[in-house]
Length: 241
Image 1 (cartoon, rainbow, N blue to C red):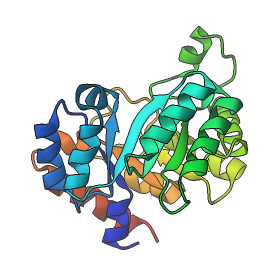
Image 2 (image 1 turned 90 degrees about the vertical axis):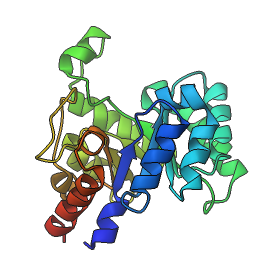
Image 3 (image 1 turned 120 degrees about the vertical axis):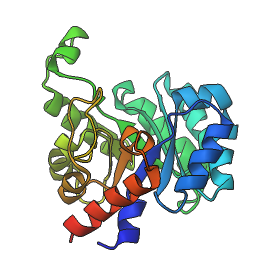
Image 4 (image 1 turned 135 degrees about the vertical axis):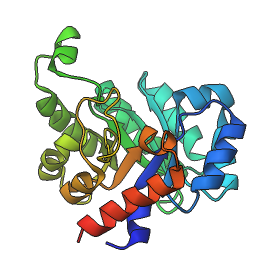
């Protein structure tokens, strides 16, 4: 894999508080990573302006708002999100088949395949464990739930899932080679685990079949964030055929 191909697999998590921070990070990392993740805190603070700020620097956007509501509300929200010109957007697979199917229909009905974002379903959060699931009445193991939800997402027309790197192989087996897998919980060897429970190195995740890696603190907290991003890309490129 070339270094440029490796860079495109990195999604930098913009866990910042305002537009000035976006300008700083997007200005520094545009061209060093493939995409920028705009999550709940940033979008609640800045709204669609957060997306536009990234795009002004030439950056692509993963809008990570994890919609989970009644089907009509989620379908409408996904349609409006697609109008922002983003590349990835997600919802919670636990919302069920009808919710996902309505979202798919809304986006596919309003945009061509070339211009629409790819639609992702969140399976089980990387902070979750078997005990977490049991507390909310789910008696399946984490791995069983991830595969169950990934299959449901594919059957509902979603383009892929967000899942722990530990479940990549299981999802590939269940859903095939063309189903997108976006993996948080990726930590290079030089970074702390923080609050992620099910983790893997970037090279391991890509070799296992991940399409994109969401990485935040290992880059943002580095003394030299650009060097950290480049080191991660180099690790991926050197360790992947």
